[in-house]
Length: 335
Figure (tube, rainbow, N blue to C red):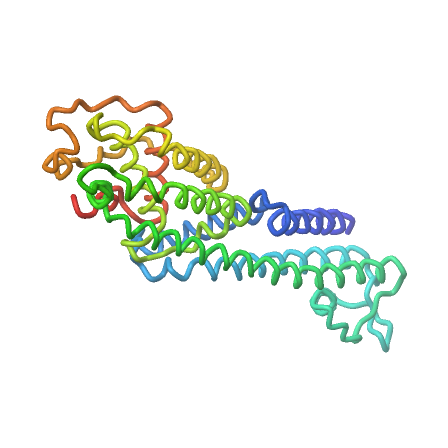
């Protein structure tokens, strides 16, 4: 029976630490929550046929959020059952004083964790009363922390949707972003938005670090889904820095804040999702329309991207696939 006690204690400590790290640390989900979330998403992705437009994926986020809390409850419940079951007679019938069976201990553990305190069964000794009190407090704290966790998560999801919609107004392909921002003389229409976009992207990245579960709140609308919009803007920045004619190219200092914001994004997103670069590099974004408008030279040479840029593009490709989309959708109007 001692093995039940050991397993129960380990389970309790593990779940409590997972809850604390997930809800309070602001450094990502706990060990259990992170792995459960990724397995959960893989299941939904498989069921959807890896189709980013599937409505099934649109429901994954809130179902996952509820499932995480239920998982905490189930494991805490199981840990108390194991601890109490490890000592015969730890819980007895409040009237007859007959030791409770496994089923009755499970019932007692459930209403203890829910803080209902039915009174049908009672702890037979002080140590078991203390454990019962500990779990009652744990149940109360779990309920409180779950509610306080839900609110900022849902707020972060709203910010994520807002950023996706905001970026969608720039254009539906890297080329279109640059064409829309070109006023005949410069790209000021885009440059003037750099600071605002940078701030929003940094905020989005840090929300990802604090609440990794928002990564699984999927937008099934291709034109405004956040991952495609971020990839389109990143590709547009690469075209500006590598292909746009030198005489009309914005100075690097004007787009530097956005480069820093993207660096922070890649650092956080790889840490949170545990995803690495795709094995193959994505196709180079088209520039035919930019050449027509003489923003890019017809005879420009494809510059070899730096190792960092190459890695970032591969990460984007992997993230896009993980979200049920395809790289061709980054260049939607040019594909």
